[in-house]
Length: 433
Image (cartoon, rainbow, N blue to C red; front, side):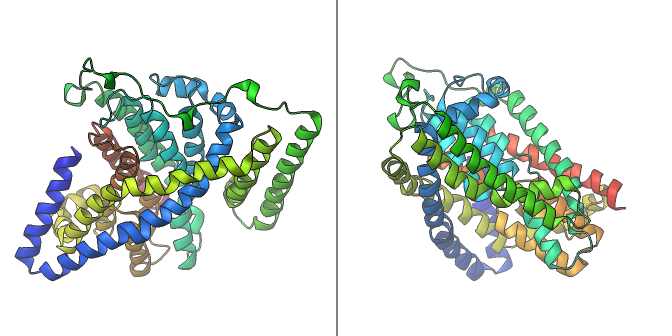
């Protein structure tokens, strides 16, 4: 499915560029996309991944990942029946989902890529996405985000009277998107067109494993004596006190629940950066050596995903530069009036699955043109918080493990996005009109 979509974007963009006389803009967009894929995404992502994969290595070697996966094991076993309950991928997926819910994008992506590596170690068909991979990507392309920090920030900067008003509507939209994504991926995997290819008798049918994702044996850990437990408790208490201080100093007409979530989001990354090295050190792990060993994988993953980023960003850039989004907006105008979607919002809806930065830019333009307290801006903010950059996520996650056949992951992701937009229309009409 992704093959046809990519080819369609390229061909439609090139043909439209010739017809509309935008060939120069098309050429510029092509080279800008190539440069952006390396300089703005792949290299920065590689550096961030070096940090988080090093931290993740410490979490694995200390047994923290295994403990985390145990918290949600009953749910994960149902969602991922093909993944052993004690596999390190379970813990990585738990941490990725938690980071997505808190809006910690810089941490969520490396953790998600680590989970994909774990899932790939169980894949008997290299190059083809497993059911577990598709389910994990459906969760990522429709994950429940508690606070749409980007949309709220833009509304607040524009002077909105109640910039946090969209938090509730976005939560409803992203929940509908999440449920649709999970249901869709489970139903679509049963269709013959998305069936897994039959395994042959070759060695590829044997699940390949990697030493760097193997769980250490419990006896390799030092026991947590009383003083070690007290030290961990003191560390946790310090951050708990910081959260309470932030909540006490930030309440100003905002609900306590929203303020608590925002405060947790602020301190979450510093907490994780210190907690896992401390926990690993208390369990007898050589923290520096293990961190460096894990960080080595960061640049390797960045190099693996680079070709996939070039492919998807060039296709999207060509289609946008040729005026494809504008033409679709004009063609779909009668349908928009029927369902109550303002025409100003459609370009953002169409771009959102392709590019997060472009969708954010379009949202800022909507806020500026229509006003931060307008229904159009509130609807656009809800959609931005209730949907995800599906094509980008698929390109990065599948590219990290060289998956070429994504099966039903794209269809499930796009269905989840459509559900998020539909839910946004309904809930915003009920709340803001």
